[in-house]
Length: 606
Image 1 (cartoon, rainbow, N blue to C red):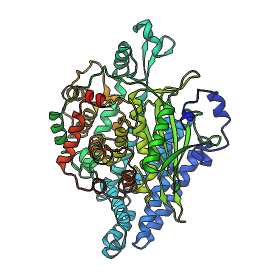
Image 2 (cartoon, helix red, strand yellow; image 1 turned 180 degrees about the vertical axis):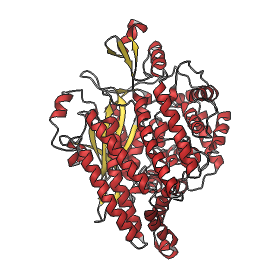
Image 3 (spheres, one colour; image 1 turned 90 degrees about the vertical axis):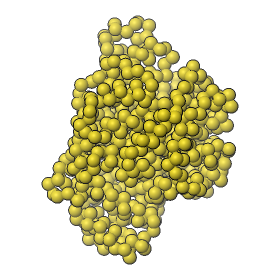
């Protein structure tokens, strides 16, 4: 598997795209051309109408939940796939078709979430105590989660307000797409403004240079300074989108009965209340961020990292990653690799598509995408999960493999943690498969993988690079989604929060928040990284710190935390893993001790 990722760059992308018309994306036949999204979308919408009718006419029982999950699966199988394609496919026509499919499916979901008759069919089930007692815990939880979706969408409102809620949600979807696109757009500058000796670091376009990122890994401080000031220069249109997005989310939250969008977003999570900010204040008072920026470690090849992951998963979970040949047209770029995830006794668990390398128009972000969720089909077979891991790594060359910085290494392990969560979840229902769980639990498996990446026994000579910005991002996110109207502009809030929390001065004429893509997917939930880090810290120290290859602990981890997806209360999964119920003080102590760990001591011990 390591050699697969160390192959030099070959071939011609244009030729590749022309000769791959036989097979659809991800093996979906109709997606061999952009128009196929319309076909897939129409079929999903027709099937959803039939399932709604079936749900409304079915007597209360476990079949009701199964029908709801079929409805969710049919819509998600198109929307999730399209959600990835709209940002990652190199062909604009595919991206445009996928975005339209996302919008149409999203609109249908919001309409269903305010469909009174559909909601009544679920209420009848939840109100039938005899039937509810007969259901297994996972089925009961899934039924309650579907009702929760109705409630936060405004099912209790009158018809006029329900329509308003749908319209607000659709507008929010549009604004999210527009804002997300804007976070990745490069900024241009006259090339003569920059010193000649650093211009080669940026893409030339006539007399202009395109700056598409922060160049944080560049060793030249002048390049990093130029990239920071140019890439983060404020864009009026993007600022307007952010302000409208925040205002629309606040209006929706208040319409359906919440004080702020934060209160709405945190329902159903481990935190449950935006008062979690008080915990962060304790952390900030007791923590220091004095990492020496001069400490670096050797780089690692991508192939070696993948071999390391394969070895770790084999020892810990009995899982191996095998490269699998793709069919023509199944992937969207010639450097995408497909991995089969195979258990030593259970066989094939699912597939991971690895889209690891930089290319034009590809966002510079590291993400895990669910393309198809796992579930138990009606015929008794298990629908295998399919996911994509997207990174932004430099390509290999004919003379050298792709080399990773410490940050890239940690991100690879982080995203692979999400992938294993998706692969090892074996829920009956798609609605709670893998990472479809409360956001502050979804990040636990990925952050736990960072501990493995930082352990010298797992990756020899790997130097830990803790990112202190996490608390800053979380606090900023909560303020933006708190009481409206905001007391200051988003940029003034950024400046104040950065200087107070991050400890670094604000750079004039920059607007980092306009590049903060997590405001879309993690709106009012970015604190999840802190909550998840606290859980991961407790799990690591109690279960894996003594022996990171402990198979018994690996099996407990799978059984208690990975297998359930969102089908079990997160705190119960944590309790099962730790063999105790952690208190609020345990969460705070875990995170504080994690942030306070002395970096130089870590290097010395390693």
